[in-house]
Image 1 (cartoon, one colour):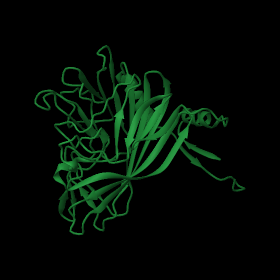
Image 2 (spheres, one colour; image 1 turned 30 degrees about the horizontal axis):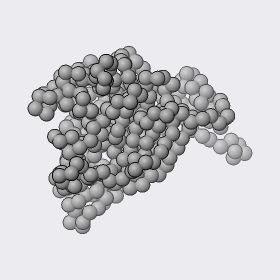
Image 3 (cartoon, helix red, strand yellow; image 1 turned 60 degrees about the vertical axis):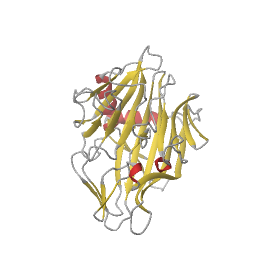
Image 4 (cartoon, helix red, strand yellow; image 1 turned 90 degrees about the horizontal axis):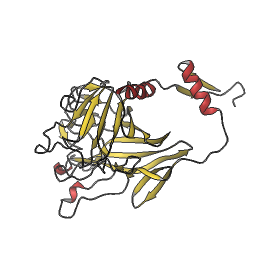
Length: 339
């Protein structure tokens, strides 16, 4: 028996999901290749999760080596939207979410700025891999490792990162769900200090985008020049396609159950990187207020992205967010005979 919480529309949606048990060919598949888990939509690679160590370019300190991040993320027309190891920030890795200023037993540990040598976040193992006709998902266990503890290297936080790629049955859009569930085994917990970077979901965008060809629009009506430090339900980041003839981008959505929702953002200013105006975006739940993570207690942050070619309007963005925020809860219950 299925118990559904939500509106009549939600019930109809759930019944549609359950209506057909006939096996169908999966439109989203996964493939492991050279240390990457690739998500493939209708034959097109759209997202790769790096589970083996990647090291920066030759001549750059190997301390910047890392696993456990998404790159490349591609549009359906084949353009790469993410960037890793840019010369201005070798610690930037596509889509990722390490915490920056933290305190462990009164000592600051930085899991973000790898060059400081204080900590990092690394892939440990895969927990689940799942593929259905219209989506595929994986759950990666990641460890936030403290390098400077008096007891030696230790795991400060355990994270289950679930990533799902969904077919929207459109030639110009697909959807990605990004859910992070984490806890700390440390006896005294860990304090996530208030800071403009850290946690949530962060993305360093392609080097093709700059102040002249990249724009921002938030649910609060803010643009590239005014969005930084403000709160939003959703944010559209878009820019020129690789051939210069069109537009592409990502709609980022924060779930209403997230800490500090509507969520604070970090959006690089127009004069970033010496005036070039490169693009970085992050939903940052600790931007304005610290967060104490108690020992052996689970916490969760949920995000959704719609990757699109062409244009995506504010009206469409709000509709996507409403669907994300109010999706029905489904609970499978046993009937009277235990079936």
